[in-house]
Picture 1 (cartoon, one colour):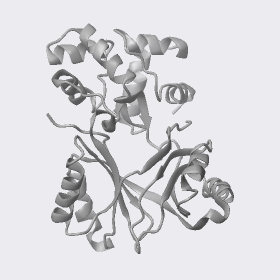
Picture 2 (cartoon, chains in turn yellow, blue; picture 1 turned 60 degrees about the vertical axis):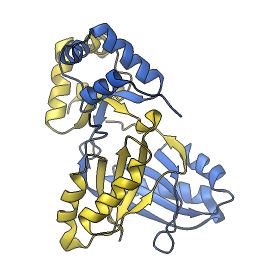
Picture 3 (tube, chains in turn brown, blue; picture 1 turned 135 degrees about the vertical axis):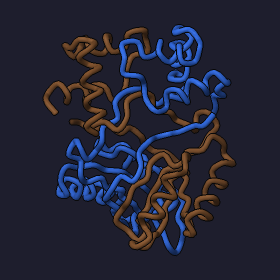
Length: 147
Length: 161
């Protein structure tokens, strides 16, 4: 990752243009050509520096629900359960964390009812209880990571 | 809270939730895929952004690759009568990326305030945690920090048609 890659990451975590030639528009202030920016983002995607490139959707704005959920999985069963949980399309992110509750995932469902229903299906498929921790209040959300 | 996406919006969301095409005219490519005009895609994307259905459009870096190997979910057991006021103050700290009030699950889980912090060293995160601890003061009965050890999945939202 060189200085140009860093500049791309630092300046394009939001605000990617909605216009006919968005890469050309975004490339200009970076001093790059359209092709160069496309190639750079493609490389950063390929080598894993970026996990995604595109719009981030906020499902709650269209009637859906997000929730954070946690499970306590014994070490010897962890990989098996991770596979089961990850196979649910409603699981947007899943992290292993240092705690007795060691699997923490974000659920995104299109409807309010879909959330408890999905949790029941995950409990049935995995054989472990799910602790549902939906947000009761959001104080701040804006992840910006400086490269 | 609510914008109701119509059928075409949903198709557009499904077509773009995995990412935008890396081509000079990505919105035109999506339009071709959906059998509609590029102008229609641009109008609808702008509308979804204006309505907050799209939070942002851009690159999503991998914490680990950028050197943020210490991603801590700090959790706090804060007195109910002051949590909203203090939670807002914690959320306003520049190094906190997400901050929420969530339900306790007693006796297994007694924490009701969650604040995500990110650092390149453990010392950096410890410093951030001590700032939060000082801010919460005696309103906080106990706390913990859960570091992420591994990303098991990070695809983001996936609607299905």
